Length: 162
Image (cartoon, rainbow, N blue to C red; front, side, top):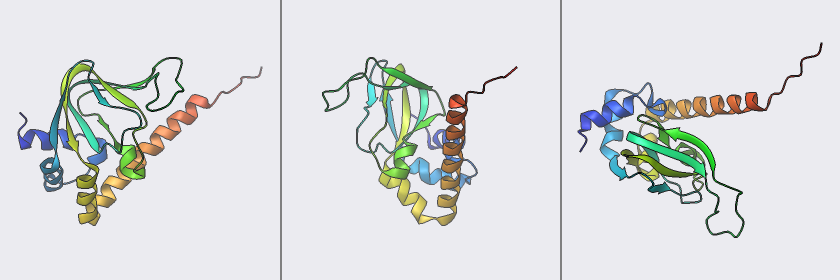
């Protein structure tokens, strides 16, 4: 069981919630519920309805695109590993913005837990206070731009002439 103080501390280290006051973080903490997962447990499946916002509290999660596509006959050649999430990492932030289904699957790599805030509760907090909303959206935009720039670099092949 996590104490509210521990949840506030965990949330304060999450980049999406950076620059918020302790009172703001307490509002988010009050909307959190703990979700436990075991090694191998499917926490989220690609195509699931918008998942809300999760912060890993302990353990490790594997983010991947599954071989089998939910509800479709097509499939990938194999699973595609995208990322590993550990304490303080978050997921679900894309769906907070576009309200689209989950873009990847997430499975427990090492047993642990995460704090979960529903999309409705998260947006209620943002819409209830312009300062909080502005701060969180600025943080989300900063994160997404950084990811886009990183992706662009991955595709930027420079030929050296000589």
